[in-house]
Amino acid sequence: MTNATRARILILSPQKPGEGFGGAEQHLATLAQILDPLCAGIEFISIGDAPPPSWVERALLGVIPLLRSPLAVKRLLRHRALPPYDVIFSVELMGVGLPRRRHLHLFFGSYSGFHALALSPPRGLKRLLRRANGVLANTLERHTARPSGAVANSIGLQECLRQHGIPVRDEVIPPPTDTEKFQPGDKTLARQMLGLPLDKKLLLFAGRWEYAKGADRIEALANTLAPNWHILIAAPGNASWPWPNSPAVTVLKDIPNDQMVTVYQSADVTLQPSRFEGYSLVASEAQSCGCPVITSDVGQAKHFLLSSDPHIKESVIAQPDSPAEWAQRIDALLVELPQASVASRSYALEHVSPAVIQHQWMQLLTRLYPEFEWHPR
Image (cartoon, rainbow, N blue to C red; front, side, top):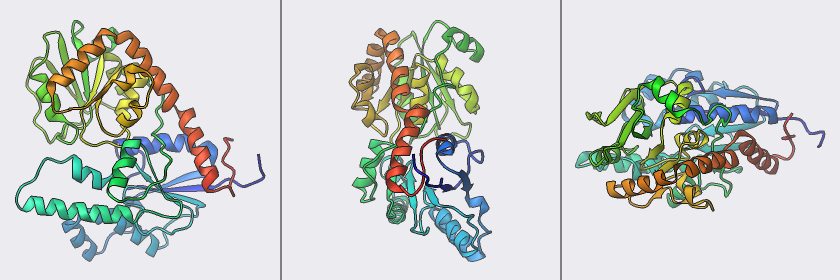
């Protein structure tokens, strides 16, 4: 223990916790909770805090929406609208153009990776526009690099960023998961509360119902369902992929995050067929509730492949466009469901619990900024 002072942390993000309901906002909220005991205080600044854009900027944003965050940062700096801070974190493209002193960028995802991997194949003019947006995204993400560097939240994301020429640090820190809130529970009671069948094996998909998240892959699997399987889709209501119309599928729209515990507890298996992820909160929350996860080879899957527990290591699908491989993996997992449930809960506690992630952040911040005290208060 030293007599060093504690740092004031400023976090720049397109949206603050509470301004949005996506994974990034949830990640920021839980990140702030574990960082707060390590520092003197945390303050968020979002695009909404920036002065209004000029008419020239509004016209430019109408053509190039990717510039929304960088232009907001430019206005914040021009009007000296940033509060006092010692260390500044940036998220998404809010890192472009920031001061170089004690700046650490956090990658929860990547526009470059998303454009390359997660979107449906375009045609004609859309193909050229997609390529131009990809080049711009790559250029902007490269400019988030600072002397402190950038940190990815999964090994899979780190590899993707480096493949696109975007520099990131060797350290990887996943998002913390509230393992006290997300716990195993009574499966029968959870299904009764949600109006779900009690006599079926329940497969859960949670997330945006869109091509990028693998909605088409779930749809293909639904067409080959065994009679004793049922699919639950828990998703925001503004879907970009057609909703399935099948008695073997239940759709629950706009479930509040605090009710997702019941959703995870109701399921036998969570399926994550995404084409691109950082580190999925759905995966870690499901595991924390003792619900095993089967995932495509994205983001967190690289972590699972390093596990010595076969119930975790063998949860990664090599050919996610094959419904037969999903079905085969589901069948194999259901045979050992009690053991897989225990392994999933143990994995969450050991790898993404708040105490584990807080320790990782304390170590990194101590290495980067030793002039400050980073031990918990």
